Structure formats: structure tokens, C-alpha cells
Length: 105
Length: 154
Figure 1 (cartoon, chains in turn orange, cyan):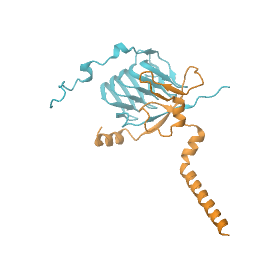
Figure 2 (cartoon, rainbow over the protein chains, first blue to last red):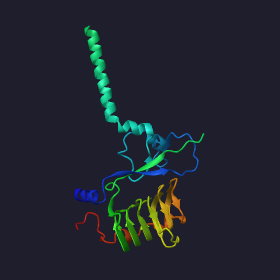
Figure 3 (cartoon, helix red, strand yellow):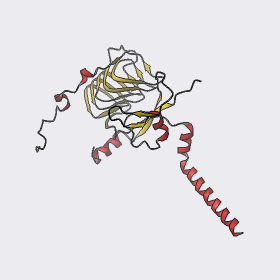
Figure 4 (cartoon, rainbow over the protein chains, first blue to last red):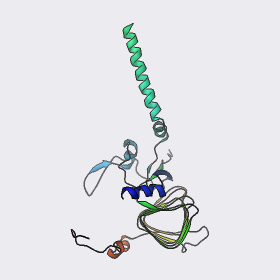
């Protein structure tokens, strides 16, 4: 797909968006899930459960495959990430200033 | 202890998923239709439909008739009319069929694999598509393009 096609696709169909699928209806599965080994290539990789929680970037996810919705705490953290970063930097700066003042006095 | 499973989300990226066609909400298409690339249905579509890509039936979207999907199916809307029989709508999906919590199917759904979500309303039958019957035929894949030897100029 060239740039023109991509432009018209985005104009006509729309920008990327995320839809909620719901809870999976799955048969009971074993609780432990660690590494899974690809039987064809022998390559070990993190299983799906770990992928959802450990991997922060989903840029390399396969296209069109649903993934687990992040938990409530993670969603809140991601939504307020900028403010949390500002707060952290401000705290660091305040601590440095306070330490400097203490050294000076 | 009864732990609730977390929910799934799907990121629909029209460019990455090659969903280049859309039937907007309020639109209605009927007849012998063929779509090259994926299709997003927010309106109503019926007849003999062939989608050479993914089919996404959005909430409020309705698909009726005989449908063949050459990719995955994502059902958030409705497959088949509300009061119709299962024979009125038949959908054949070569890939995986995802029926989301808002999805309703009254037609016959045939797919290689099925993923159901809680709340999905599957009223019609589901049949597993056997691999042998859906192997692509050469003239089916390259019907518009003449065959060329590798390295030859067009």
C-alpha cells in the first residue's frame, strides 16, 4: 500500500481504534504458563499471559489478533503517565534543592 | 476462588489490516458484490458477497446472504436477519471467526476456527471449515493477472 492508498484508507475507513471484545469463553486451562517452545523452530518465547504483562510495546504484535485488556491499575498509570513523570521530576528537583540547601547551611 | 478472566481488546488498524472498504452506517448494499481487501460494515449489506480480506461487522452493521471471507471475521454486529432462518445467511470464513460480546449470528457460520466471547449470541449453527476444501485455486487467486515468468518484463 503506497502513501496515497494509505491516505485514502485512513480518510474513508478511519484512523486506528481499539474495540473491546469481551471475556473469552475458554475451557479451563492449567494455571502455570511460562515459556512456550515453538516445535517447528525450537525457539523459546514468552507465553501469551506473560507477553500481555511484560511487554510494554505492542508495536510488533501480529495484526488483527486480540490481546488482553490491560488491568485497571496499568490503565490509570498509562493515562496519567505524563503527570506522573512531571511529579517524579519535580520531586527529584525538590529533593536536590533541599539537599543543596542543607549542605549550604 | 473464582477469578474473572480479563477482557480482550482488538486494535483495528485499517492500514495494517488492509481494510480498504467501508459500508458506512445508514448505507445499504445489495447484490453480487466483491471486495478486494478488507471490509468494514457499519450499514447493511446483503446478497452474494465475496471479501478478499478481513471482514469486520461493526455494532449496528448487518450482513445477510451468502458470504465468503478470505481472511478473519470480526463480528460485533449482526450476521443474518433477526427473524430469519439459518439457511438465509451462510458465511464461509477461511480464517478465524471472532464473535465479540455484542455479536449476534442467526445465520450459518462456517470458519476454520472460532473464538467466542461472553455475551456473544450464536443462534445459528457453526460448522468447522475443513482445510482440504478451501485450498486456493490458481485462477481464483490470480484471475486478473496473466502469469509471467520470473524476471520477465511486463
